Image (cartoon, rainbow, N blue to C red; front, side, top):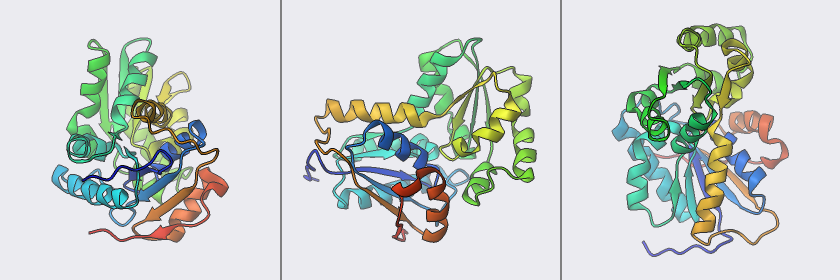
Length: 270
């Protein structure tokens, strides 16, 4: 491909659903001059239980779509897609690409006091071992306890961020973290920060929760600077695209993006 987007071209951000809006929000806050095209693959959420091959195929489809929207860089705001598809995308695409695993792992390694780090994520992310490898690259002696929490994503997608069912599920999932005395817990799925209230209460307020969104936004800033792609605009523009049910996307998205999201386009994939 020979496309060379200009500095004021948008950044492409994609996730399996709504969770990646936490990353988009962090980019909006840290890089207000940057425009964003966000794709949430709500028709095929969650990615966690799907095979690596399927996740790579979905990621390739969405990345190709974003390239045709003229993006200058792509942020893979999905931990499962980062774990399975990031190397492929980095090799195949002619624009810079970053994911969310390394920024979160780096923050966890810096933040732990006792060396006991917990990681929660989708089944696909945990199976991949991506966080374990990334954390050990930063802190070789870290003790890591990992747990797949597959029900968290559908609970978030339904807007059940403070229901009794969510509390019950959280207590079950987080028990191994309590037993392991982790002092740092990586929220290894971009949906999980929307459950911070519940997770923080169950795990204990003295445990540091690592939300990779802020770190990823910082990495995005550095990526743009290194590639001389920083926008000169004073204020960016935002597009939001869902592969299904834009009404639900808009309703839930406005809970944490407010007026930044006023309209959701629909674009089926597959």
